[in-house]
Length: 148
Image 1: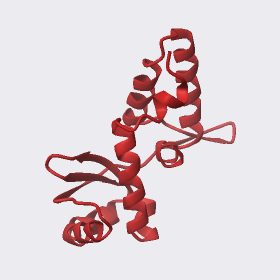
Image 2 (image 1 turned 90 degrees about the vertical axis):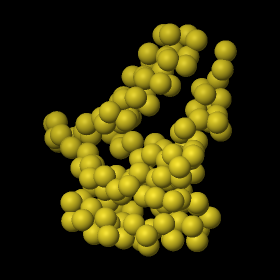
Image 3 (image 1 turned 180 degrees about the vertical axis):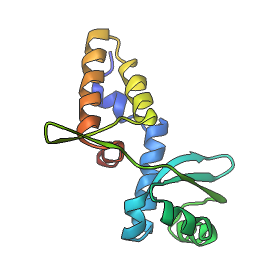
């Protein structure tokens, strides 16, 4: 049976690839852009990076700056041919008993289900699923990827 850290730290997963992309993106762009963007997907064959933009004003601006971002990423060692920007409001926050609670995105749900299914012990997998669900209600999905 695999240990939890073996499951989560496997280097050949899409999560490991996205962790690298997050680090390159967030070390390359200015602070104002870091706050309103999230690298969402990368196609390694076509070298197309998809970035979610969480602010409609920045989204409009970034559509015109694609080539600047491509050059910036290339200068930091990340080969990309195209960047697709998608407008996606970041997270809805719900106030329950004076506690800020994040809605869980479809991407986070997929991540939770994917990793919970990897446990041979189904009870342990369900506990892990419950843990991640609670974690994502208190922290956003980006925090989990960047901490890992």
